[in-house]
Length: 138
Image 1: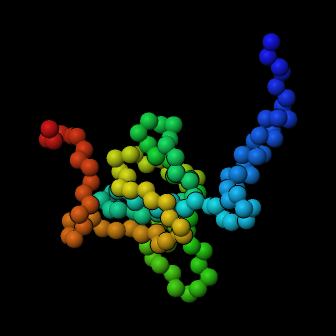
Image 2: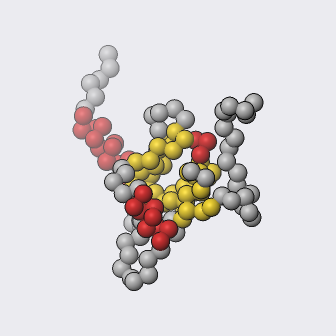
């Protein structure tokens, strides 16, 4: 007969797991383990590059879920118009569901960079959108 599990054992194991996640360094020195991801994706003929704290596969098949977008809190007089446009476009958005075919790349970076909107005019860029099936495309 199997012994009955003690709920306190589960809680202690969970706390130990969280402690390792927060401080995986065995020497005991604490450091910041916040992950930052840079996501580049196609949107309306442009390439958007945003930074976020969480990227996961969505429950909806074929989509990537992006949480906690990061934007600069401006304390100086200089304001980047592209950053402000992205901030306004995604204000009030709690998560993004991006189709996998729109994703160009996802990078884990050490620090947050510049959010950008880049043109896809076919000039010097070698990034092309994934061809989509439709009328006339066989």
